[in-house]
Image (tube, one colour):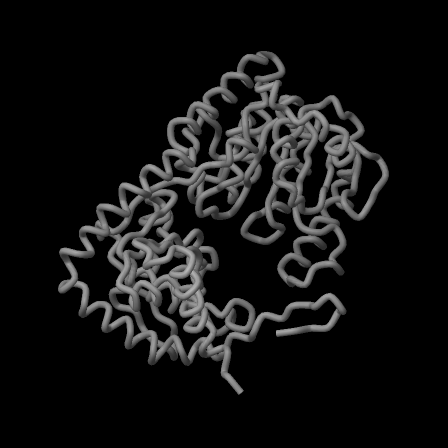
Length: 437
């Protein structure tokens, strides 16, 4: 019997190497990893084949869960942080260059620690202590922000490209008074502007926090409707304990504050094309997008909303603080001060009510910000330039990095291989309803 927990990452790297070499009919010049497991596989391939490696962490979990290092054992059964933090350390130190979406991802701000910065020194009690995990001043770090797919997320003003055939299904989602498994609560006054938000239903995304802000602000409730797209409505359909708790909290808020009539809860929507038109439909109502996360590494939904011309309010903790120029191309809100956040949103809609041109001004400024900084063309050009620069640097600095690579190989063999044994295999349900590994 093969111990697949121990060998799966290694075997995956071998499989990927064979498939990529066959597809390209030769060895690649660059390998890009994404997320913890993807970056580790990229490290193994780059180490074996001697090719340039780029890491994109997307979201390092360490800063999302306070004290997840000191109390790692409390999180281990659900999150396996010991294994993840070890994989992250290996991959970020092995990479020839690292791409981040924002500066805050590297070094944080005056009030918060950066995602990479949090790996500089920490302790996993009873396991190991990190004295110098990563150097955030290393020139391998680069900020290259992603964009939204402009074929899907384009401005609401491009009437000739609008997907009007989808409007009936969008109106069904937003306004159908009959409660279904897909949506609950009704909007009594569909002519009001809509505050819109879309995210996973977990504690960090803070969707229930947004609903509570709205529920407690009488002025905001009179001005606008609230629509959230998040998770499942029925807690029995979720296998995630954190999501179940948030679903139950959402139901409690609806009942406690009598939100039916001013609030609409729609379950998660995976049709990206329709979601793009949904953003634009909210623009038609002269609404706004709100991203209330406690912390957000980048904020792709912020970019998507702004790309459609939707004025956006987003958390000041993480990437959105750099995407939005506060008061110019959108607005920052502090999720730890919900009352002031809801007041700021209400102030915006009060002003738009008396001066409709203000909504247009913020919408246009948001679009301008996207065109200047957050498009995939800009991203691709920067990535190709960096791959050339760091490929050359890898060639001329081979001797300097050999000692580091040897240490990482030892760390992988002695620590990671033992830790990964504790991670259970993913269980999938087959077509006949049987569970398979």
